Image (cartoon, rainbow, N blue to C red; front, side, top):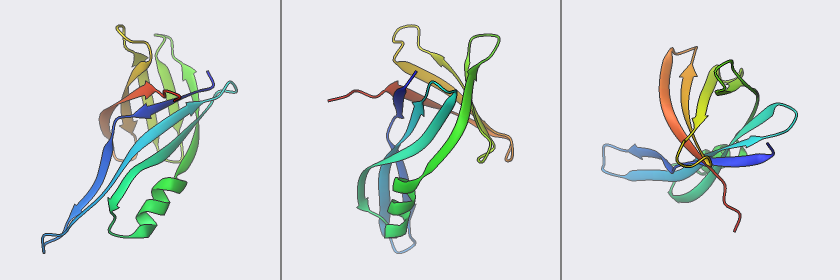
Amino acid sequence: MNKKYQSGLIANTDLHAGGLFFCIIYQNQLEFFENGKVELTKKVVDAFRPMDENDVEHLKNFNIVGDYSFNDRGYLVCKFEDLFWTFTGLSSEKDSSIIAFNIYDRRLQNKWGEVYKLEEII
């Protein structure tokens, strides 16, 4: 594998009662390695109104390592035990550089979807 995929843009926002708007825009990144490890990091795109600079540093320094494999259906499965998260993904039939993931948090029993695209090197 040895490839890195990026999610779409995500906003960490807060709107205070006084009307102040705070925002950090970032992307999640998944990097796959040949040894079966996957690394989840965050890339800050624009910290234009952070409530606290520590929030920006937390996103920049976020790094969780998990394991990946393929299940019996051929789906990509990434397990991040420290987060209690399992990503189950499948590449798009129209564009194999896009992977759609169903993410399950077994601690909160919550699930959501995220889409990742192969990072383009410029």
